[in-house]
Image (cartoon, rainbow over all chains, first blue to last red):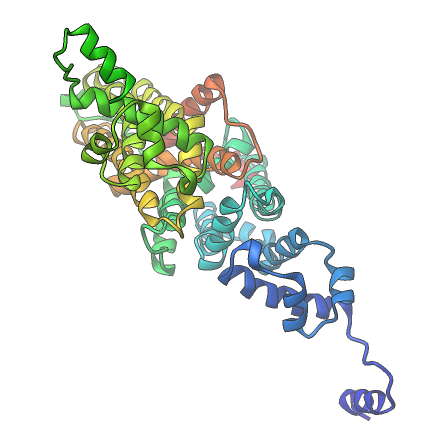
Length: 224
Length: 224
């Protein structure tokens, strides 16, 4: 008897189908994401998300107690899709320059993507009325991503490949080179987000600048 | 007739005092700044700013036609106080590392200051309802500051002191290292802005990283 047959029997005998909480939560989060991307925080309703996801309000509140938690879950789901890509073993098998370019490309695809940009804009827009969503974005998106960079940088320092005064600063500097201007221009709706090609080029340039700097060690005699 | 006009007449024996437009505009901008810093864009009223500045509504609209222009003037006034400090001759007299540290410190004091942070937050918060203020912030604060960096970098490249693949990218990278994380944390109200000492230290570290990079040129044999 297949799984489908078994569940059909359960349904036909009037016993409620048991869906794992994890799957229900994914349904809720997918629905909530669409709501957050197209509405302001204020107009997203917990009851409406539950209804659209086909989940009872009781289950919804059991799994996600507040709207702040809902936003946090949406951001976490987005990040969750990216963290496996930051896989350290795969990165460590690459030469330093390639590994850093790869790390920055993954970061760029995440941070300079349409979804993250909208979530960030929403968090700033609502930072006065709903401080919990700014906190959720900071704790769920910004801090864990920073930690990925810090860990990678620490490993490279331990391997004797790089030397930085402070790993936290170096992590901030890397992410800043990569993201500040494109993100700010997009959050203010002044420029389109960079495409994958532009992100890859920027990642390469950031990696080179971070590793080698740009000073000319032997300036021409005229400039001395 | 306002109180100011009346007292001017008394002082000048009946001849109306003519205040230069520049001075009137400064009064308006100073008043508007306080309003923008403590209210949302929506609740700032042109008439109220005029009244508080002791200026007739007619004069106000002659000098500043729209609320978007008012916001732009406030941002421009803030930048105007900083641009003289980016003086190129003074910077060029310093050794490269010192000049870059100075440039980044000035930029940090501006961008990571309380006033600029609030203006930026306001511009993002209102980017949907009032896109003109996001445009004003971008065109009046972000673009001109970026240009200062581009010009300075171009001069150093012409002098043969640095070599960058693209001056615009290098300008964005520098500002990003300096500002992204402290600005984002402050805009989301998660961390206090850095003080002058922290800004100066960060500027020094950014200058060193930008110029020299952090790769160890002779890794120990174990890491080769």
